[in-house]
Amino acid sequence: MSNEKLIALPGGRTLAYEDGGVATSSTVVIFFSGTLSVGSASRLPIVLESMGAHYIAPTLPGYGNTSPPAKGVSYASTIQSDTSALINHLHPDTTGINLYIGGGSFGTVPAQMLYGAPFDKFPAGRHLKGLVLFGAFPPFRDDKEKGFEYTKYMTWPNYFAVGPPSRFIPFRLLNLVTKLFISSKTSTQESAEAFIRGFLFDKMADKEKDMYKAWRERKGYEVGQLEREMAQMNRRSVEKSWEGFMSTAEVLHSDWEWGVKDIHDLDEEHTAGRKVLVIAGRDDDMTPGEWGKYLVSKYANARMSWLEGGHISAIFSMDDIWAEFMEYAG
Image 1 (cartoon, rainbow, N blue to C red):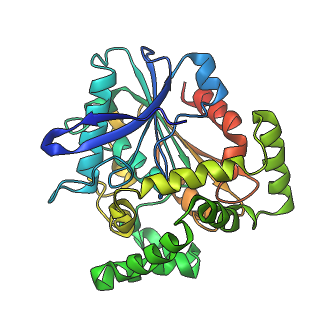
Image 2 (image 1 turned 135 degrees about the vertical axis):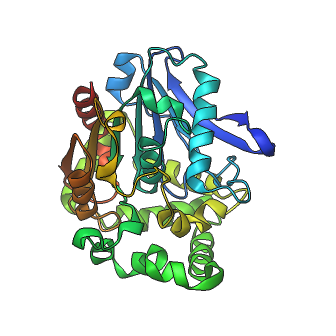
């Protein structure tokens, strides 16, 4: 059951989020989910519970009950201001807090936007201790920088959906076709579950299916429960608007607004005392591990952890990953 809360923002916008753990904790974790989803704090990692952390999961702009960016305002600026408003609302006094930011899949983009954001745009960044990225996206605008070509590792469907063609075909036509396809598959809860199952679960290798079974047994989940939860979040994410989904390619190709040209150009204030952990599935064809390797080569104090399995394999090792990250980031 959702414990979603809403914050009224300037200009009539709204920010939706869920949170869990200890609301007064000085250990603050903000995690962004991926596309076609909403923020959820229903399953807190064991290490965060034991630390008494405050776990906050915002819903991204244009999804669910979170408003799209205001007209003329960039996605990066929206993430900076929305997250600042969220932190100010929940932790008005940031003195002494330790902030950790993470994201999964598309959610790694807003997470990284905050990591390098100027402190006058995202003041809480001064308290940032670590960044954890599950299935990470690199900055697409750096396509051929030093020979790195993000398109080289994309499947053809993803190449057309969010790669270069998505930038040049007008009126969001590719996005519209994809939207029509997905909406036809998720019009009911039952059809959405079947779509999620076919898209993510049925193509798992036997080893990953064994990991999933072991995870269900540890968490007390019945067969089909995770698929049901994911389908529910999928449907909630587009109840009001498809703008979040329709803007995906635009966001991936947008400026992160760090004020520097490249990741390794971040100043010492944005790197000293911070750690970056990148998680990649060996069989992930949606966010290829080569993207993660590229990011690790660019970020200071970064390392990579590989998992067996595909795009959602991190779910089945979430407790171990967060324990590794919190020990690493300190």
